[in-house]
Image (cartoon, rainbow, N blue to C red; front, side):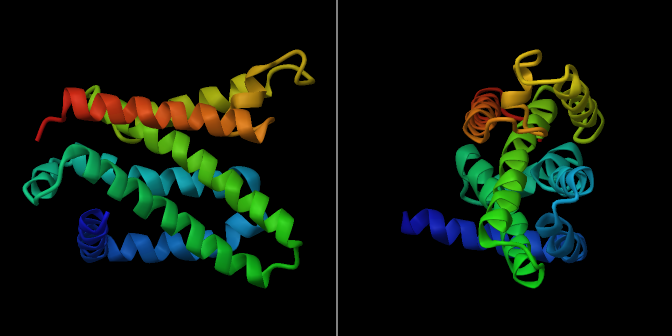
Length: 196
């Protein structure tokens, strides 16, 4: 565990060195939009942020620099995932202190963003691992998620709304669905590898 934490620290330093401007800009957005729960806007900024993380490095052929360090594929995957969640969680939590909402509402807003981030981190890596784009295909999946979850007038008519990462009709169902997508992306990432 100590070894992984040391590798995580090095990975975070590398990300801050390479992407400091983007990280600062998105952190400012997350500071205000996640606690206010401006639904589409906050989740869209989370989506844009995730497209600039590991998926972007793989698409732009920077992955060989990462894997040249003493990291396994799983360590790179989880380091990037944990770093991405921390950059959504920390500004969202700080921003919640300045917004006049209850602690429970702030917690649910942040949890909503984290579940969404988990699902779309997986979707982006699945797309890139299978040779697709880090923005186009995941964005089409996001649009399909919004459209499919919006069909019907109630949860009885559209059970997909329960597990949708965007709508999250059932928090536990969408969390489990997001984790399934995440671990599927880990499996593909380790088994197929990427074009370095």
